[in-house]
Length: 140
Image (tube, rainbow, N blue to C red; front, side, top):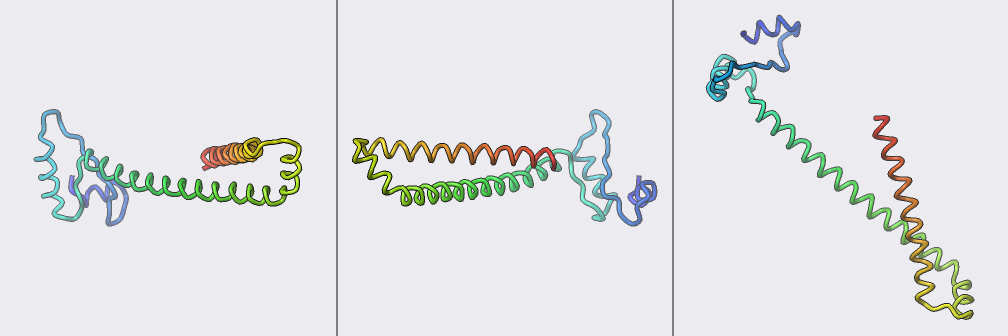
């Protein structure tokens, strides 16, 4: 079918966005592609399903890279926030840390106390982020 007839059949004025062809078994795809391109005379692009899939995959690969970079940036921001909150916590608790050390606690125990707090903050932040992300995926 000529492209002008396809436009008229589809009810679009001046352009058909896509026309799919089904070939009979045994027809050479490359010859069919060349024949269709010759009929269209550079008025449209001709792609095989494999070429179309490759183009879509290349677009998705770029998007995946972008999403990975955004995730990495979010991780760095999260690490900075946890570090900052722990630094403030240590600065505010200097007196209490001194009292605990004078009562016989070791530096390792104090470090484990703050490491536990950091782990707790990280787990809570991760759970909140995963809940938010899953809620966003469902609503989108």
